[in-house]
Image (tube, rainbow, N blue to C red; front, side, top):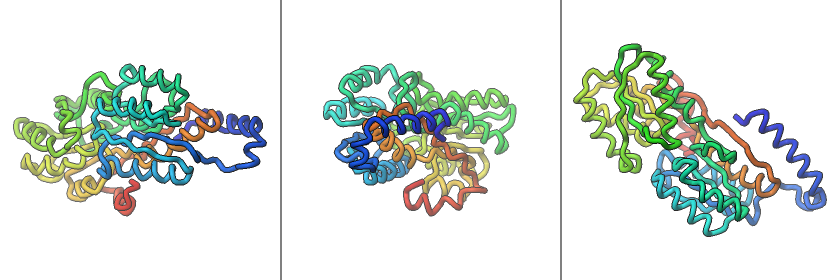
Length: 326
């Protein structure tokens, strides 16, 4: 949730803004972004399970606030995200909403040029540490640790072996894997690290034979953790079927509720799902961009984490998943 510090700061800033521009506010009291253009990095591909809720949230906020929304899709390719940020910069919009997968160092030149041009930059999904930008998404390290802890609570114990299928490179996204690793270390769970490929990130079906082959070669493995990738989480049932594993024979955990993940929960192929509520990661950055551009209200943060789904508590969310907002 937004911290008290930020809520208080926003309220004070709003009050100051109201007193400083009272004549203009009297003429048009409604907060809108009418006339503003906002470029928005959605992450994946249009309509996919990891992207749809974010798209719908951004569109809802843009419609409400009368913002011209310019969505960008990168298929989760970090280099393409960086290229798209610079393409958006060249268009000189009012604001650009980026994902932080490329890391602060890689985006420094873009951020410097945006600041010089007076373009608001907001971050969603993955933080850009040290920038002070408004951010809406999980605390990635804490979310990765939560995944590991919940898998342990589901029955993974000291001496058991797991496989962590993720990214372990020195990028912002690797913080999720680090959280899971530290949770396993603390519980005495051993593990192998299996690096996902860029191709599998973009097309999760390519992860199925890779993980299945690993499981067949390592029959002592008790668990599969997929820190931070909803598309690969959604194919865990296919992974286990391809490896000849029965539902419930492994403890599995990953990210984001989706139709395929719900099916996996129902059938027992998926054990734990960390929810990051991507609708908020779409809606809130548009609102933050308008607040910063119109009133100078910046540095807002929201941890969009919505808890954890298991076989015991997911049914209520199914209609919302079918609508695309969860």
